[in-house]
Image: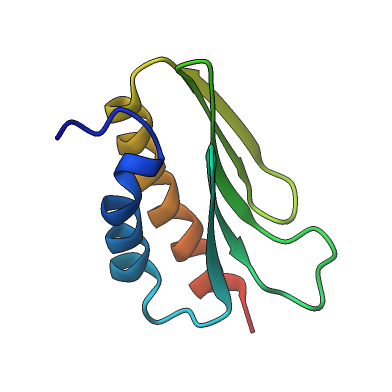
Length: 102
């Protein structure tokens, strides 16, 4: 089956999350009907680092906030391309969390 939406890609995204964030227990992943969010659970930051994909009308919007100053937003109609960008951005977010989290 071809992964044509976020719901059909859930296992792939969960496995990606587990492989990248296994040593970062202060993170969580949340799936909803048309979105997936990886979040840093930081009590000291009211606007913590987040990475999300939102699906709307066969378009995908990836948003990344590093929790301090960097915002990235990418829109694309190809889920495969968005998931590749999601993977690279998830790695970047995890690297920053390892470096700057207490």
